[in-house]
Length: 215
Image 1 (cartoon, rainbow, N blue to C red):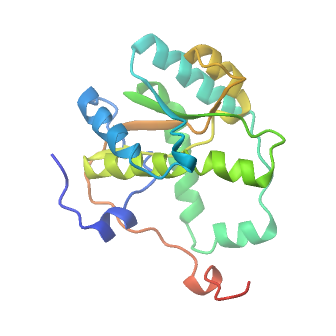
Image 2 (cartoon, rainbow, N blue to C red):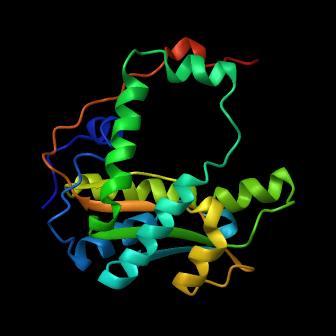
Image 3 (cartoon, rainbow, N blue to C red):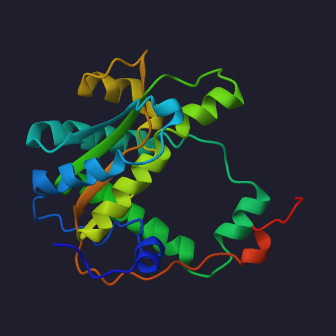
């Protein structure tokens, strides 16, 4: 059953869901397949369709993947935020506190999430030119966002994480992915949501991000 959302509502209320994931309700395979079917209608560079979606629902496999998620988060990783990043992150008081609270909740309960979705793309970008990087990532990111929108429309919650990054090779081994040929693009917990009344996020003003003709 689809939620009664117009396009603007769908786009503006597809939230990163952490604390409102229903950890006790399984997600039907049919719903996930519908989301993947819609995801693969996204644009793809040169029509190469290099995208893949690995879905983990089996109990033992979920526990293995959940522990990798926790280990990866403990490694930290990624470049630290710049001063400008921090100004935007904390532009609205309380926003980052809520995000960290949600992240802690997910960390403690990730083993209970009924499904994990790991989008992947054929080809690796280490050392690649900006052109090749943009072509590769541009052929998976739109598809994943379409998946997340389709999930929201069906009462499912998602959160894009890059937790797989520090342990990508190990996760690839657990999932049977040929690491030298395929890149794991994200790690997305998936579940029904507790309620569906999500609201638009508070963002920095348009004037800070919109540029006409020049930077």
